[in-house]
Image 1 (cartoon, rainbow, N blue to C red):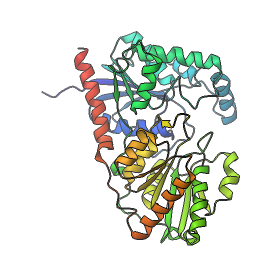
Image 2 (image 1 turned 180 degrees about the vertical axis):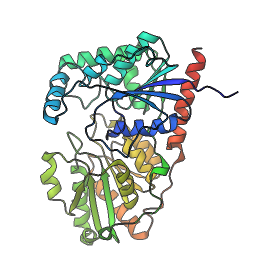
Image 3 (image 1 turned 120 degrees about the vertical axis):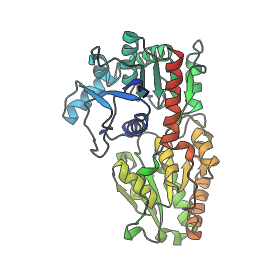
Length: 405
């Protein structure tokens, strides 16, 4: 007798064809999770920055709920900034989305953040249906150390909603043990550790090109590439300072080195980039194109903002994509934390953003590996493939369904 797949209601404000880190993670997750469950996705009709090549699988039922925001960019951003003073920027979507009986019919609920609005909507569905609920956090919510701009009213709102979510969700999923520990400290009266699971981000091997054909201007050059934006405390300064020192020590290196930044560079960093000892090639590419550019590179740059205590709680999804590309990674990140541990475990380079001499040494080591032909001889860890990680997620869901029968 054919097994009837359980139905999972997936709640995520961001989803394909939107193009941002969370939407990409949702896309990769849905592609694999659809082989385990019937999926119904509740998402937004947000269209900013979309990539039509990223499509939700046909087997997934999709409900695109209205955001209630202006379509034009400036009015939309103005409304988000105004709302963000007191509540989640996507609050209107979370509060105005009402699912009918058929739409909320499911065996389990699975929500993802950021933004926190996804969990707020899932919380309402949980209270309405009583179905088992898994809440997955890509980053901290109420106590994100980089959200220092939030008003006291917004902080109180985030704290109140987060506490409701972690109290009422049946299972919590975090990408790192450091983030889980943050939640344990924030809610000591709740069984955070007992109800949580650590699952990292994941890469999909078949999305990378098999054949790597370099552009003519990259042939014979040691290519350093960074994927992502520079903003706030995340600055290119540590890498560029180290590069200045490396080129000063070995001037011939400049002619054989290429630096590429793919993403937005905040205006305050423009002068810094303009005075790089090696010209920085800048551009913006789609997600699938970024995987191709990773494979064309010799060295992939992870550049994190330094934390106050020297311990990085975050796990950038691009780091996992880097691991899937099979290239040397220069990790300019805190020496403590999951990111640093993973890099060291797989033989990559870890150096603190506060250590310019160490960054110089890391750059020169990468260049030396390039000269000796060792830069692309990097093992690809199978434990971070989408099939493996989402398979673990499916196991968590199956156990929860069995437990709540």
